[in-house]
Image (cartoon, rainbow, N blue to C red; front, side, top):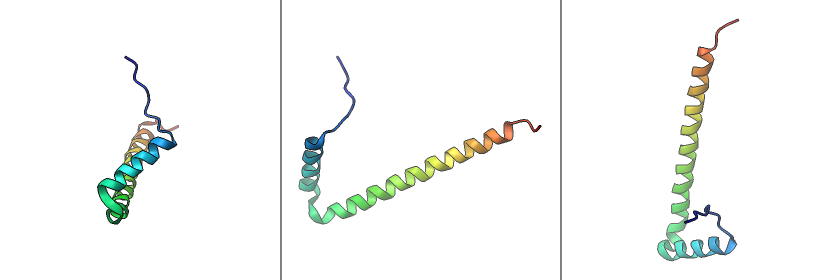
Length: 65
């Protein structure tokens, strides 16, 4: 059995957007997108913080010349 990567074309995205619009309605959609945006921003901030800690740890391990 082959596993295909999740690649969506334009028609798939239109169908997904239509289904989301049916489920949540036009009034709830902006709130949903705002919450999604805050979640993505929080995730990126957390990843940057972890990356900064790793880089700081790497700098401490380097011997001074």
